[in-house]
Length: 215
Length: 407
Image (cartoon, rainbow over the protein chains, first blue to last red):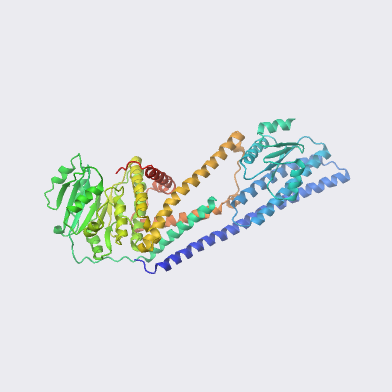
């Protein structure tokens, strides 16, 4: 029979704790790896947007016609932004540590979205281009209706190459997001703003969105 | 929420696995000396066993033990086939047939009848479809030299491996026998399988014979022995071979009965839970028993909830996207795949699984069994746990609603 049982139990506890500490260390490095990865692609997108912004500003001042070139770049930006948004949400759900880093990344991401959103508005006004549409989507990550609205928007985007969707977490505490919410008077989630003007609060189906876009 | 639960479950699972692995390394099995040959009465309860009873009796008659120190008592529990005739045909005086007037009321009643008629100071219970190794008695009886030992058991191996269900049970029996061996070493063994278990008759008399109203009398008697400060030990050098249920229905019925017995008897002996008086059985084994039950039911609730949520999301997505869902799918790069690994869930699950695999491998090594039947192994590891959970739920519901007990 086992003698000195206490030492066996303590030994086993020690080994088990070591295994779990190893798991936490692995998790910590994985989180850092993810944060760095998102940080890198976010920086690239920030530079892209900055480039477009400067180009827009330059064209405005010097009266250049860059409308066609700028418009053609938008699709690529929009796809990258969507990819960053999905990846960020995905990684955040799997995070073990680095909550502050993720909060910072989300803040940068939402700011980048709003910057691009305003940039497109400026481009639209300057070029008088009515070929593409924008939707500003306010969601709540914990809400089922917001998820449904996200799927409906996926459906619309799949069949519309000229639509740019910007998704903003309505519950995220950021001064600019609050300003935009106040500007559009967004009170509930989900909510969408079509082409900078038409606001709808509550779930809207993909068919209804398509109808609204055609108006 | 689910990740915290998984971490807690995995922590306890890994802790218990490492504990058993440690025991495996420090195990120092000493064979007890057999300096006298006490009289052994082997009791075989039988109910319609005409196909197997002859082989069982023959295997018991050929046991390597002094011939004048063994008797075989077949207790017929109301067979309607040729069981009685087959047993009566034996001319050997060591074979006795006793008729149990309480026909078909359960094995415990037949065992008690056999014990009351037994001449031996050691009584053995042998299922009618089991075969003992030749040296079983020689190797087992010596353990009774210790006054602390109330019962001695053996590893049980599966004889029939033709159907898929039999093959799965083979794996289960290998693992169970291995863990029981380790439990025996640390003194937490709490079952005396019907296949072949020996008891001190005076101890069985003292603690009040087998409980005739119990679904799993072999589990109950072991708990009662421990409750009365006796030990159950396993002699690992020999095996007993048994037939297991060959189809789904029989397996289901057997397991639900076992699990109902487990629940009932753990309730009956709940005072052992975390009770230092019962040594490691109280402070280690009974909490593990409770933990296993807890895991089964909480896992079911959580798994059900998450499965429902996932299905609801999927269906909602499919309905909204109208099958365009497949257009959204893009093959991830290797980097994306690696970064997408959910360590919070995967790490504890994989580590616990690897420890399980190691124990599985060692169990085969210790029991001198080959690793075979890969499909059965796969099903046993990944699908059978769900079946077991369903059996547990059935058992719990049957106990909650006090359904009729079936032996």
